[in-house]
Image 1 (tube, rainbow, N blue to C red):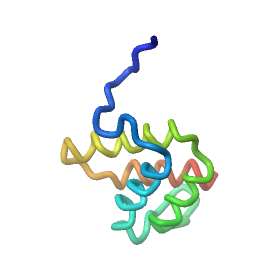
Image 2: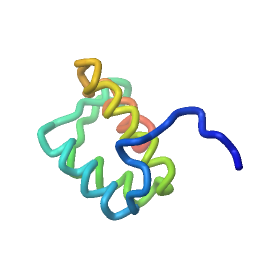
Image 3: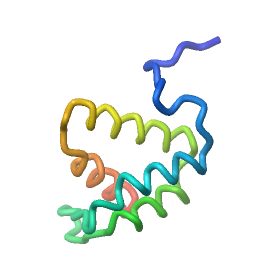
Image 4: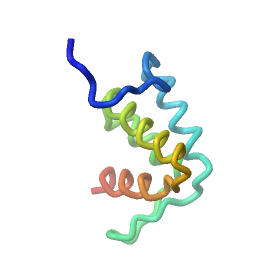
Length: 90
């Protein structure tokens, strides 16, 4: 059995639909996520829908884990969301 690089106790064993719902609940607070490199903005709900279409369930889990770690440290997650939006829009 392979060991994971991190232990994801908070989201371990959840299914894909639940992860998408959790991600939508996190990003719905962000009315506008600005992508400065292409001078475009996207809503949090649009970003969640696009990620649900494009990403694999494992990638969604990794994004949730990054957000969870940022919230645990008390950091702003807007930068993570801007990076995700840039990747999705390009």
